[in-house]
Each structure stands twice: as structure tokens, then as C-alpha cells.
Amino acid sequence: MRTIQHWINGAFTPAGATRTAPVWNPATGEQRAEVVMAGRSEVDAAVTAAAEAFESWGDSSLTLRSRVMFRLRELLVEHEDELARLVCAEHGKVVEDARGEIVRGREIVEFACGITSALKGDYSDQISGDIDSFSYRQPLGVVAGITPFNFPVMVPLWMHPIAIACGNTFVLKPSERDPSASTFVAQLYADAGLPDGVFNVVHGDRDAVDGLLDSDGVEAVSFVGSTPVARYVHERATATGKRVQALGGAKNHAVVLPDADLDFAATQLTAAAYGSAGQRCMAVSAAVAVGEAGDALVSTLESRARAIRVGPGHDPATEMGPLITAQARDRVASYVSSGAEQGADVVVDGRGVTVEGHEGGFFVGPSLIDRVEPGMEVYDDEVFGPLLSVVRSRDVDEAIALINANPYGNGTAVFTGDGEAARRFHRGVRVGMVGVNVPIPVPTAHYSFGGWKDSLFGEKHIHGPEGVDFYTRAKVVTSRWPRVNRPSDSELNFPTAQ
Image (cartoon, rainbow, N blue to C red; front, side):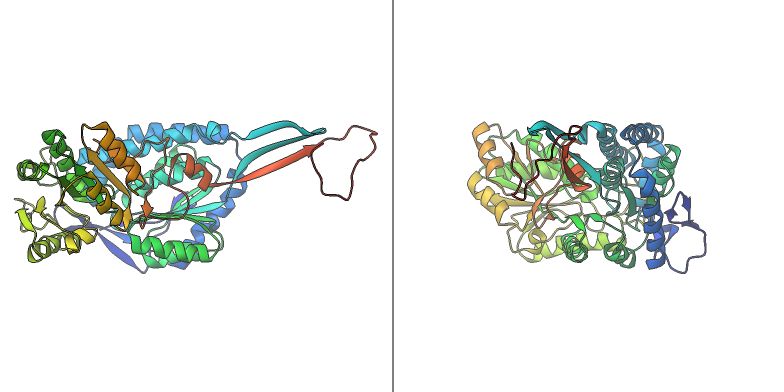
């Protein structure tokens, strides 16, 4: 049985840990490895290594940091297939989907390659007599990232390339469900020339998380996960004076107006709802059919859902793989049941799906439920699986009100050919990321990712310009170089510009 170790100070930790957790192959239901679980001593060792590395890395040149990022970018291209197959084996998503998350994560590395531009300060000459003023940003020190299972490559890449390029050192606590991708990336960093201790990986559960949140050596924490845990991370870490950006859960709606191209909308919604088995924080889980669009949209969605090929992620014919665990599979199935019990119409039932040769896998098929209403569990909860609920709405204003009444505010979309309706929609919804005829509006690297309401705790969104701000602090210098033998003009009054 392969054992997945921590990566601390440029090396794997020695074997012999007392506590481990199983790592499953979701397509077979068989254990493929065990991962060592960190306690406070391992967390402290990683933070100490990062703190020692910061002494030199924090003063390293922007040119050196950029060169490391350029090299990391090339290594991610070179090892894309190997890394994608590793994600497939532990997460279950199809290989091509795993490639997609690597590419999107790599875009953040490309943004970090240009850190010299992102960290440019301001300079004002002669703001007062013989006085100049300028500003720049400096790194915080040791920062930490706590990331979920659903994007084991992309979400950590939202954090550590920018943090490290800004001059910080980093401790990553990835999901213990699919941990191998993070240690693989750690080795790529080493190959890229990153000094030991700048990037560290500790595996674990709540003990490791609490160790990072409580550590006096950690200056900031980035988190992506469920809303209850995001709230907990924010409260506990801010109580110890840390900066926190904690991204929580989602209930992403996609509104389809009667004038929309229904074939196009249904195709896009099918991909957004069932891609990666619905295990995306930006997956569409509620389709809002406006007016007469309802019946035709449901009929088209049904045919699309029934045509999806479910199977192991390594099979090129597979379009949708398994869920991450047996518990996740059973949870999704329970929402299909509760939807039916609470009055919704089950149009496509994915419960009980089995895949030949993979009968032990954690599979559930695409499910489609119509005439769902707020108050039903399937609508109110974040299902996080291949289940699409259809809600009926009279008009676009009612759809906007429905979205705004939801406690989540991560992403939403509208499908329409009416520019005025689209503008009214994106201005009116209280949501952080909006797509117009784009079902999963994940911003590119030069914009920042983040939701509103219960989807974000903290002031800053993740990656992009706000990521640079989060991982640095501003410093303003007011400078004067007196002329030789010039009399002093200092006074006891508060200084003013002259």
C-alpha cells in the first residue's frame, strides 16, 4: 500500500506516522493508497521551515521569482498528462476534465510570471519642498492554503503561485481525499528551482486545519470549501489576527428566458450541471425556466441527460465519472428521494446506476427534477452532485428576486438574446460572478474569483489583482534628503505641504 507523506522543507517526511487515512479509487471503490495525517507537530515543522525560508525568499528579486514561475509553467505543460491521470485516479473525474483544471490553474501561474508589473508601486516627486513620496507592497511572511477535493490542482494554484511570487512562503493543507496532486506539484516546484521551505504540504483533517489557524507563525489563510467550514475558518483565524479569505458554498442558478436558443441553453446547462459529476463550486444546480420556456427546456434537458455516458474517468468514452466517496453518492441519491417526497417531478432518476466492471464504484447517474420550489431540501441545500433542479418563474424580475433571496451568492447565469434583459439581470442579481449565455462564469486569471453573501467570508476575492493585494501589505515612504549645510526648518506644529 502506497503511503503519501507530507512535503516539508523540500523533502518527503520519514515514514512511521501513527495516523493515516485511506485514499480511494472512486471508479472501483478500492483503496489505492493511505495518506499520513498531520498533528500539531507536523504543522509546526512546516510553519517553521516556511518561516526560515522567508528570511531569504522575502528579499529575493522579482526577476528570480518570475523565473521560477516561468519554469513551473513549463513543467505543468510537460507533466500535464501524468498529473491529469493522477487526479482522475483519486478524484474520479474524466482525464480531459482534469486537463481542463490544470490548464485553468496554469493561467494563474502565467499571471504570476508577470509579478513585476502587478507589484509596481507609485511615486510622487516634490509633494512638498524637497520631499518625495512613494509606495510599494511587501510580502506578509508565512501564509497558508486549505483546499477542497473537487479541484486538487486548480484551486491550490489559485493561491500559492501568487503568494510565492509576491515573496511569501506557503503551507498547503489539501484535501485528504485526493492528496497526491499537491505533493506532485511540490516536486515540480523543486524542479523549477524554488528554494527548500518556500512551499510545503501537510496532509490531514481538522487537527491540521486548527494547527494552521492557531499558529502564531501564519500571517494569512486562504480557504475554499463549504459555507459552515468557511465561516469557522474565518472566525477562528481572524480571532488570532490573521488575514482571511474564505470561499464557501454555492447554489448557482441559470435563468433561461423564452427568447433564448433552447438547444444551446440546454447543451450548456447539461455540461454545467453534470460535468465532473456536479462536484464543482460553480456547477449549475438550479435552472430557472421563465414563462413558456419551461416545458420545452425540460424536454431538451431530459434527452441530453439520458445521453450522458457514465463510467470510469480513464475511459475515453466516458463523459461523467463517479463521485468522490460512497457517502457523496448516497447523499445525492437521498436528494432525489426527498425531492420526489416533497412534490417535485423526477424526470431523470440517476439512482442505482452501475457500471459494468466497476460495480463497486461510487457512481450515480445524471438526475433531473422539475417543478422544484424554495423550501424543498433539494433546492435549499448545496447538493454537490449530478442533480439539476428546474424551478419555474413568471418573468426575469421574479427570477432575479428568487436568486437574491438565496443565501448563497457565488455564480449565476442568464440565457437570452435580449440585451436589455441581460443588463437588467447582471446589474440586479446580488451575486459575485455572472455569466451572460455563459453557464460557468469563472473569471480568467487577470480578474479575481469570489462570491457574495454566504459564499465568501473576508474582504478579498481570490487570485488576480485582489490576490496580490491579499498576500501583500502596503508601505508608503515620505523622503527628504536635506542639502548640505542648509539650516533646519523643523517646527513643533503638525507638518503641512509647502
